[in-house]
Length: 483
Image (cartoon, rainbow, N blue to C red; front, side, top):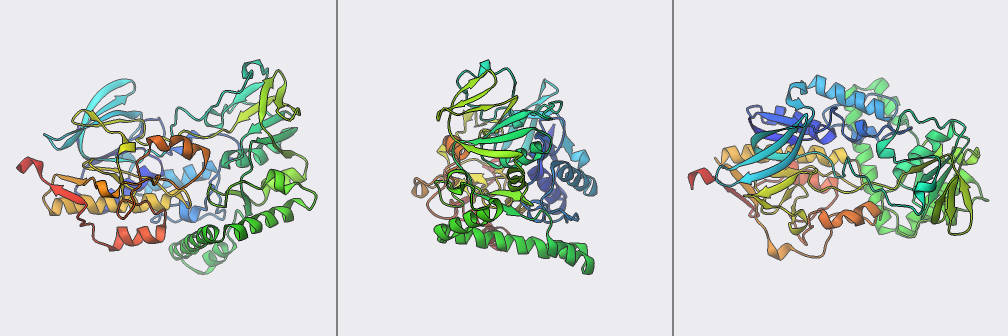
């Protein structure tokens, strides 16, 4: 089978790609290949209690599909419902093939196309396409970060990683230890605390935690007097500008931002709580992603004595709990290892050019969405300092403009020219988070100048994608079939 464009993944990015291809490239054939048996990506994969967005849905939602619910911070099932609505509304179902896992993609220079190996219900099939667009996210769905803890096999209760949540798990009136301090831990602790006897969030080091309302009051007000689409547009831009402003201020005035965050936490937990030990990170704000706590749910669980934070390191697991290096022991019936994800640069696909393997770490990222020296290829990689979808939407728009420009130029290939002068020591993601640092050796390099820099700035990117010309001396358009 041959398609003009193959999109990998039917999560947020893949659905955005489908919408944009239908709208802007109506004469092109395309398929969205999803390796799993359901659409939704992250929002279908994770089933743990409390699963929700950690960005507001006015920016995590699509630009073209208004989020019309009161809650701006939405739970997983509501997000899945929104994604299914989008697929139905824009008639994308026929373009999506489930249980189609692409394992290999080889660019054939002779034919100017991608040769794909696709596992369809465990049977390998061949497929070709002119353009390959990876929209399968940035982490491994099959292999999360699961460090070994000394004597963990001695623990007589259940050990579970949130990525492989057992929905039959009964944690009512149980003692729970959640290992970790990131967004997953901060989400899962207050959700489980409602039924559990007690939940301990056991962290090696603190994370910045900020409370915010799950409902946007201005959004609720404007929806009463303005059309839905206009309200969505206004709230979306209010949130985009606010996110950009707070990120800028945090990077420019880190100490002032830090003090403000800690002051808010003190107001939530009272003067006797040890903020310095449990909620004061060693890094500056936005050197890692700040965790959102909707409606103060984590703080309320701590105040109600249903949850607590312990900051220490683990010596070993024991039959009925965890022994810490301080000598303290935490009893547990269930241990949840919210220890993070593993980055994945190419959606678990073995990518090659004329059967020579492509190592992303040896290549520059072009505008944060293509790879130097790789023809007819794009990757959707969202923002780490704002909503993923903002960047995914822009990337999809850019890819459509690029494909249309190739047609206009009668070019079968478009390839970012590798620029040796642009190489430097810059890493793709300017974050100190553990999952980022662990996986940078497999991610593309960031260059020291445009268009090889990954700005992580929506306001800059929107000009580059929507207003500026795609024509660029760093892009080579050619027709190999005429050579």
